[in-house]
Structures are given as structure tokens and as C-alpha cells.
Image (cartoon, rainbow, N blue to C red; front, side, top):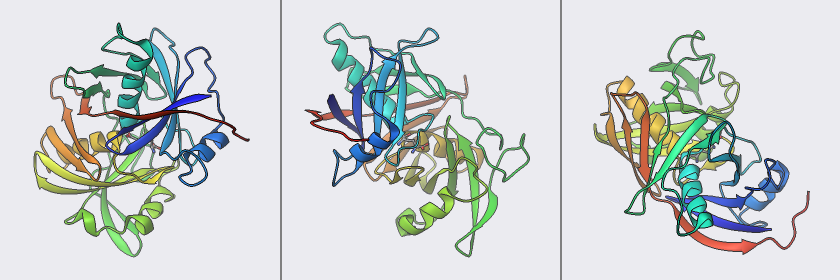
Amino acid sequence: MEFTKYHGLGNDFILIDNRDDPEPRITSDQALQLCDRNFGIGADGVIFALPGQEGTDYTMRIFNSDGSEPEMCGNGIRCLGKFLADLEGDNHKTHYRIHTLAGVIIPELKGDGKVRVDMGMPQLSAAQIPTVLAEADQKVINTPIEIADKLWEVTCVSMGNPHCITFVDDADAIPLETIGPLFEHHSVFPQRTNTEFIQVVRPDYIKMRVWERGAGATLACGTGACASVVAGVLTNKSDRICTVELPGGCLDIEWSETDQRVYMTGPAEQVFTGKLSQISG
Ligand SMILES: N[C@@H](CCC[C@H](N)C(=O)O)C(=O)O
């Protein structure tokens, strides 16, 4: 089976051409093996380009590196946009309507090589995130939660997948490997959560470190960057148009006042193609 490796700011994925079959060619257990950085190809996730449904061009499904299936992936959908264009060749489309478990998401290939994505509207009620940190129809903004003997004020946002955002003075000082899993698996998040630690450099420039559900510390998270700007606006800490600096580079995010949708612009690069010689499971 052929595959292509892409990354978006160092958030890396194995892309599989699955356009002739609505079922992913490999199982979640096999995805876990392929993502292993010593015994497999190495990646933060496996992404499938599947046939479209409900009037869309294609469907995206993704497995995290632990084999779990998230609803959406921001860096991944930019990579998918580039992958589809590469597969379609010279006459490729520039906009794709992609069916995901988080609804229809639209990546647009720009002339400068970047990909701008209409990420849809953020969801803000506790039930939508989901979390039990507030009543089902209430927002979670600057809500205290005790983790590792410390009170953290968190703001929760769903970009189709769950995000828990904390504003800190120094993002580099956060011990991600110890604190990240405590957020991810906390009982107030019934579907676990992605966790972002945000340092506001200026209202139009924030610095983010992320612990991803099902993947751990990654170099970038597109849905996390979108959720963090939404959280910044809700807490009066950031502008609606904001650059997010991640360990792997910068993303430009806009939470539009006009249509309330979030737009993300950033790079996606092909790294290599390969063939799987064997895969068990
Ligand atoms: N890296 C991604 C998010 C991937 C899914 C996430 N780990 C989850 O389980 O929700 C991004 O760029 O958005």
C-alpha cells in the first residue's frame, strides 16, 4: 500500500489514498503501529482521503497516533487539501468541500502555497464541548479547575473537537508531559480534551503550547490555534485577527465578526512517499 507523508508546521501525518472505498484501508490498531516513531513510519496521525458524501468532494477521516478517532484536524485538513491536489494533477480544484465528523470544512489552496481553511463556527456550550464544568447550555469561560494541586482558569471551545485553554505568563515554563495528561484524562471531560497553554505576547500575537488528545505534545495544532483565538476573544485577551506562534511555526487565525466562522491560514508540505511492505493487525 502506498502512502504519502505530509506535515503542517511539524504536525505530521501519513496520508492514504482511499478515494475508491468509503471504508479506511487500515484499522485503528494498524494506524497506531504506523505512527510509532521507532517501529513504524512515525506520525501524529493517519489521514484517509475517502469518497465524498452528502454533496461534498471528499471525506476525511483521521486516527490519532494512539488509534483514537477525532472529529477534525486543522493541520491535517491543510495537508489533505495539498494531497488531493497532488492526486488530481494539473487540473486540480482550488477549493474542496470536505465531509468530516465535525461537518463540512473547506480548504482553499492559495497561490503562495499556503492553505486557507474555513473551519466553521466554534461551539461554546458545555454540552457541545463536551464538559461538565458548567450547565449544559452555559459557556465555560475562566472557570476554575484544580489540577496538580493548582487552580487553573480554563476556557473551553469546540472546533468540532474539544479544547481546554489556559492563559499563562510563560508558556515555555509549563511541564507539558506531566500536566498535559492530567487535563486530557480529567473526569470533567467525558471525551477527553486537547489542552492549550497560551501566552499573550500582544493582542494580535499569541504563543501556544499544546498537549493533544490521543497524540501528546505536538509541534502544532490547527484546531487548537483556532480555539485559542476564540478563547482569547471571549476573555478579552486577543484580537479576532491573530497570529498564533507554535513550536513548529505560525498560523494566521481570524474569527470573523461578519459570519462568526473561523478561518485558518498556514502551510502544508509533502515530505516523502513510500510503500508499506507489511502491516500486521
Ligand atoms: N493536530 C490536529 C488535531 C488532531 C486531533 C486531536 N488530537 C483530537 O483528538 O481532537 C489539528 O491540527 O487540529
